[in-house]
Length: 319
Image (cartoon, rainbow, N blue to C red; front, side, top):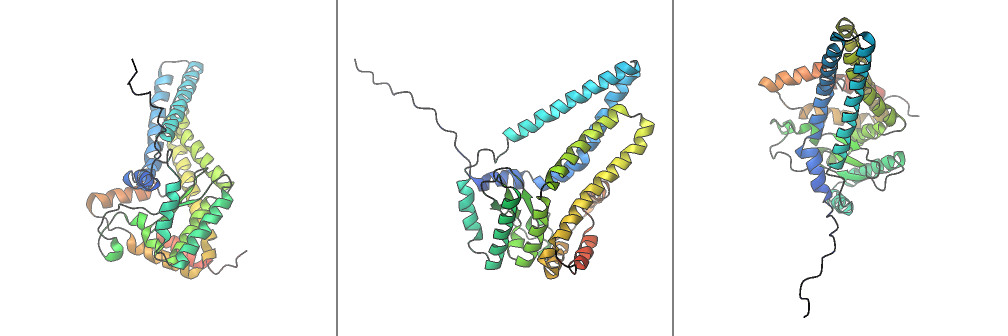
């Protein structure tokens, strides 16, 4: 009798995802920008609190040598957990299984209707990032989509998405770095040139590696301080470390502003004018939380200060 059953089907190759959909999931839906700012404030506080609790518990009824051994072991276990969490984040990253050919198609559609000056600025930024990240196969472009339909404060109405629409960033992925560009910037070539010059500077080596290493060391330091230092020492050391951390962020941002002077004084003015106009109007609880974040996690210098410095350094002679 002839076997009429179907042959066993070969294992299917996992479907690769669409670039634009993956970027929307990673950057827009999860609001990566806002989440990162929250993490800068929340994670150190949590690590410090955990360290204080564990350190106090370990020291309470143990001899000094045993207390040191226990706190050191706890620190190692927590560091291992953090490493595991990073691994999980990598495995669940929406960009991990992207079909990067769809990124090329997306870029063609994105740039098709742009002014030639804007296309030239984007192409120059892509070349600069590719030169700074030589292992990259290609540098891709993405402009946040699916944002709220109502206008930014550029159109006299409130919109918290303004930070995405008039800003840019570089995701320095090893093989596939992505330049994120707000849709408002795409229509302003001068401001676009200034912002991208600033962001490309963040990618320069070895500063990128040093900066990332300093962030990791600083985060680990919050936990270690809580585990090791007595409370009376902690109230002195913690504010100093926090101030040093924020200073590191400020130096990084101001150095990038200085490097962006190559775009010219008019470009700097165009961007800062646009950013001021686009800043969302905060009311009620949003205003309070925004003020608290500005005081406790001032990762960027005030806009007025940066705009004034940018206007002055634009006169400096270029190297």
